[in-house]
Amino acid sequence: MDAAERATLVTRFTEEAVTEAEIASILAERDDPHAYIGYAPTGEMHIGHFTTMRKLADFIAAGVDVTVLVADLHAHLDDEKSPFELLDARSTYYEEAIRGMIEAAGADPTAVEFVRGTDYQLDEPYTLDLYRLIADTTISRAQRAGSEVVRQSENPKLGGLVYTLMQCLDVAALGADIAYGGIDQRGIYMLAREVLPGEGYDKPACVFAPLLSGLSGGKMSASDAGSKVNLTDSPDAVEEKIQGAYCPQGETEDNGVLEYLEYLVFPVFEERGESLVVERPEEYGGDSVYDDYETLEADYVSGELHPADLKPGAAAAISEVIAPVRDRLRDNPDLLAEAYPETHG
RNA sequence: CCGCCCUUAGCUCAGACUGGUAGAGCAGUCGACUGUAGAUCGACUUGUCCCCCGUUCAAAUCGGGGAGGGCGGACCA
Image (cartoon, rainbow, N blue to C red; front, top):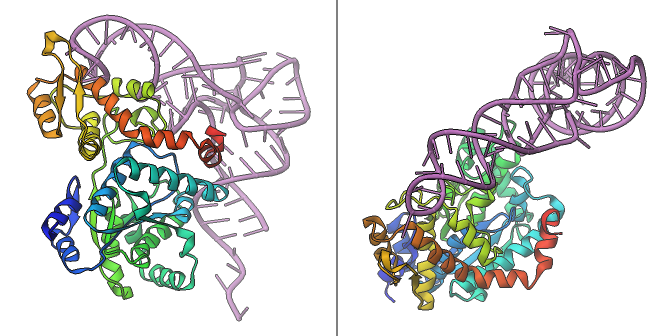
């Protein structure tokens, strides 16, 4: 694979790359290019996480070393989303779920290095850098950078600001050339590009994944169970959620069902060599099979493919894609029970 | 350390002065209409009124105590 192909692989299905040129030169010039993505182990993981994780398979295939940071301290710093006592259990659950997603995406989970925040964020060099950054950064600058990530409230805690600065330092501390995450992370990594050189570190390149629409229209919401498919949802539960999903005929805007297909199902099916089957009554044209998203979208936009026919096929496909992760988590119920004693204990 | 304010449905809040065991909007659930969903109509549901004690026939409401949150003042060799 030449450098151009690798760059295409790294940037496909993304919202933005900062910058394309920097990514290309990193891939061409570094012997062991390195990307990282961080997750704060807070709520249960869902299909939105899976979509973002799937891309790790692209990084790996492009010859990029991948580190997944399970940012345990961040999970508490962000408005105490995770209680301090549950950080270890939730981190363990996240690690296992993420391994499952990487494997389900057709990549080797052992190719990814897992690091926890507490593995290095309490060490002296990191702490000193953090204090320097705290001293150097205005409250409003940090607030602005983290506003899409950190929970906003009328009476914000300092934790949210420290969270943002720590995430900037994480890029350098982990030695990442590329910071990868959802487009909501953009503000933080733009701050990182701005401040890291002043602390003596390289300016990281960035790759941002799109944030998928929720199933009820608008953005996916952690507090709205019906707006997303959970990794442990049974086929029936997936079917029910997709059936109830906002899915206007012929429109791609805010259409979570189509987005799931484009960013998760088809990339995974392509890797597995599978196709999406749409069963349809004869009166509407009979069954059809899709090998790629573009063809399906064209049929959908033209009206050839009706939402009522698409939904059952999409639900089955989504269910099939998450099946390995679901099985993995159900085989080890203690993971969820210990991470979320309130709901799974 | 002192003072003031806040705490009612999943969310935002009304009700408290003038005690009679609770309401609105949004959300949610269910129908109707669309070959899905949404939108639109129609219907429905939702509560330890922060906790404890007291006054009273009766307390979300009055009194006392406590918890949590917010704001301000004071202290500044």
